[in-house]
Image (cartoon, rainbow, N blue to C red):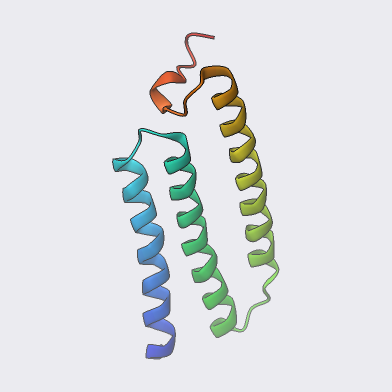
Length: 100
């Protein structure tokens, strides 16, 4: 493994790990949770691209991952819009599923 592959791969996995840690620590607002999920998916996407480019694999899986990431962002923003419309704020504590 060359250093041109190891350092970017470790940085992308570090970005995904930082997104996960930030998601666990900052669980107050929905928009922050959605941004942290996007940071995690971006880090995993970069690591998948690096693995496919340096490994000689096809990039079809990375295209599938970016498609799922776009769908996740769209659903997250629509959920955020509906929560703000019904509750008036985007705090995760106000969205208790047991209240229905």
